[in-house]
Length: 301
Ligand SMILES: Cc1cc2nc3c(=O)[nH]c(=O)nc-3n(C[C@H](O)[C@H](O)[C@H](O)COP(=O)(O)O)c2cc1C
Image (cartoon, rainbow, N blue to C red; front, side):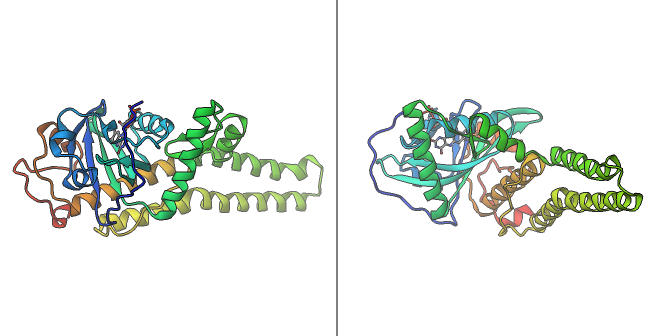
């Protein structure tokens, strides 16, 4: 674990309009940083790009658990979103919401892209509390909390039970069907009169249908609406996240897409090294010009 020193208590604020972009190879060595990233980090471009690992900007307040979860997610081919406190070259710090995603050439992961946005004060306060807890438990060797795909979870039996309750959509639908069958059969097993048995079975079927709609159809309808807004070029909306299972994965993928598109529509990329360009070309939206032409919002349509 790299410990960069010294640090100060001074926070550097960047504006919500700015995004800090970096690209790494598969080992986490920087291959591209956008001008805002360079300016906010306080380093010179050459200091960042001459084969430096990303932990050059690591702040000692960041718990190892956050980076373990980041790497586990992106190496599994999934995006990772979380808050990161970074250290500037002069020791000051700045908070970002990091949105990290693998860059692919076909099925193969060829690097990673991080698009950082400005978090809200409330997000920063929650992250400060959580990360202090994670640091304390690591020092004491008593691990109670961990991160999974950017979300905090309890370890042990309680955590396992919580994960069960938050099962994905498919599992929830199976549980729902099982419960509906049990309710429908109960009066028959208790030898209740036929009208009561039929009424209960009907109510169970209707209830299960209503719940299935809420569990599976409604979140998908929301996603379709948000995807359509993105498709129409409205990048001002924040994509909802927080669902579990495949709907949650789809939400996070769409969220990452919206952040990346927003960045592409507002950024100017100059002097992108060849390796990064090749990485970025594997994303259809991220086709840089070799002549370092500014990218404008009109290019996304
Ligand atoms: C695309 C990408 C972006 C990253 N961004 C940061 C970052 O902004 N700050 C940071 O400390 N680590 C970042 N990391 C994680 C670092 O590679 C590294 O895991 C972390 O700094 C901890 O390093 P250490 O365990 O060697 O101390 C990023 C990794 C990737 C792949």
